[in-house]
Image 1: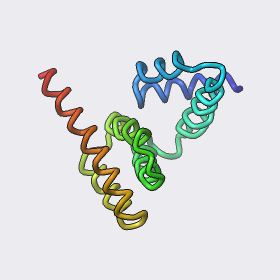
Image 2 (image 1 turned 180 degrees about the horizontal axis):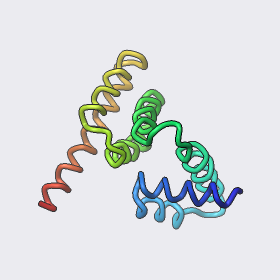
Image 3 (image 1 turned 90 degrees about the vertical axis):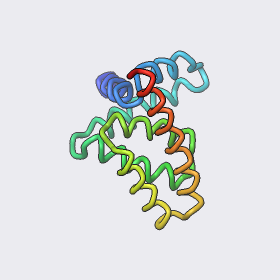
Length: 131
């Protein structure tokens, strides 16, 4: 493992998904799945998200489309939250998911809209309780 890439990945992952989420993922890791947490943090978040050729907002929009196409609702929920952190607006999320409907199929988009709407409603509730 490249320690610098791993640490950069942990920092980026924490800033996008939340430090609490990342700390919880590592705390819950055991001998069986810890290597996956390390792999994802080093390569996905450090080696790829750590590249500067695309802004985080663009990477988030790409992830929303790809994860929707793969029909991975748990990951999508997490990445909708991260996309909002990275400056993707609800309107942009909607446009990404509409494009998913055309290129990946309506069922994928229907499920993705459902997940995104849930996240957006949670965010509104949280914002309302803070105000």
